[in-house]
Image (cartoon, rainbow, N blue to C red; front, side):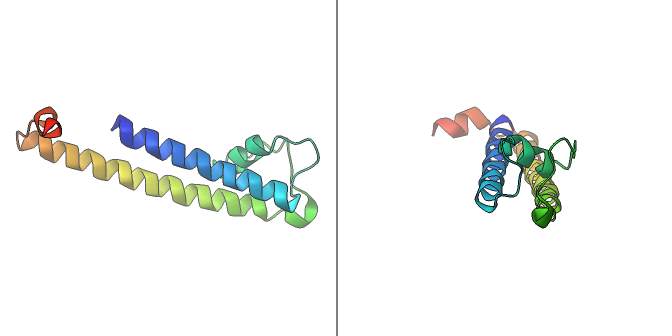
Length: 102
């Protein structure tokens, strides 16, 4: 579980970095804005509002939020699937450590 969650967190962070790069290329945020913070706030739908996008790019924030919600939902499904697989292995009496050494 720890490995799955760690990989998913790294994947989410990578996606936030892609969004922040997109904001930089498009010039969507005000000058001197912390683009990674801005992308995180939008991606997690937190929406502090302390940094607002440039007028012509204002729909980029909701698009980022929509993408974040979908990806968090997908991650939840992956975590649930991993948990189910682990529980099946435990119930079947499989020694996970022994199988990993093979």
